Length: 523
Image (cartoon, rainbow, N blue to C red; front, side):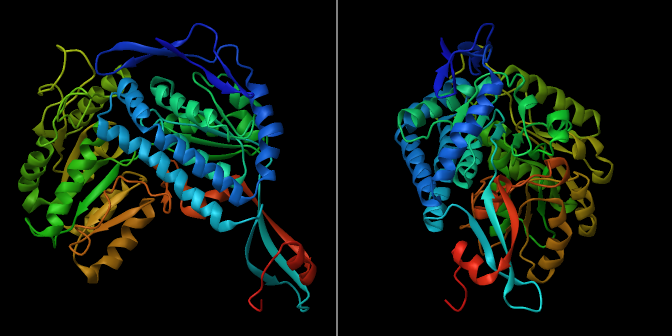
């Protein structure tokens, strides 16, 4: 059993005992231990600010982009080893492991390309500026420079690689050093990723530090130039936002939290049509991929009452094609939940939804065939479809996210009521709308968009071209209002804003244009 070390202050540091045990969720066997006992968190933050920050700010965007490209290449070359780590500690199937790791390398590669396109600059200028007085000479520009603190990243258990590098890629390109803390329960993959990045030799000292274990008193050392990005439960996000150290210093906080994502099948879609098949295919994937342990997984399914029985049958048949099994078992496409805590939470959450009026219509959390399983070990759970026939009164369905392969069918008789029911989730990361009604689409978007960070419209024109709804693309924003945390990540260059200070610069236009290297429309 290995001990996961933290990479801090330019070296690998083994935390003092006692340490937390990491397990293989397919067997319950211990595979590693991790802890940050004895790590001086104040020194970690200071090292990032004083060593990592200056090193990154000295680099141009193109040079930072080259760094990200190298990191992407290093992780891709270690792909098989990283897949093995994911399977061992997160219980993922090979396909789900690749989904996580390829998300990390792809995001790094995307932001590497952005860095190259920004070229040999160290700051950004927005547009051509504006004339501020009667004189065309007195001018104003807005510029963006990296903040002079550290970016503290606290990540969730479900994507140890992708979650780590989707945040780090943006911060590093912006010019801010990173202190990243993966969820301890599944930290083996993040640890292996960091090993490869450090071994590559291209990472500037202090640019990226890793904490394997508790955050300890890390957040007591934040200052006004620091930023905090968190992915996890809404309750923890609320706690972090309210910390005295965070509030007193006006520390920037970005939270991605619970999300009761919705799929909406519009009344114009006929059973068996291309768009209907797309809806069935997408929804089945989003219920089962990563064993439902995705922030973008579909939790609520709104559909016409007239086809509810047929949808339950067709969706159940599609989900049934997903074989449950030990990660290494032949044909297994859905593995166990990531931990005993997850296992207990999913069963408790399922019971809560049933107590709230939802009834099972397909599947069982406990009665299932698991290929390659040794007896009854492991944190396996079967996919379940529930149904609640009074969507407006389904309080538990709209307020409690079961972070596993569980979704609830919510039939409607009047489509006009659906946006209001979607809104009962109080904000989500993702909503999918399946319709071929082009005339009504604008109104549907206007009603649904305010409650979601991303709206994917499925139709027959894109049925064979669209991405799976749960895929987070670095070019589009990831985040959502309300319950989803109110944050926003990625989105191409938009993602850099969180890590940069926008400042208005006013003065003589000729001087400012020259100093800021602004190219006007006149050349």
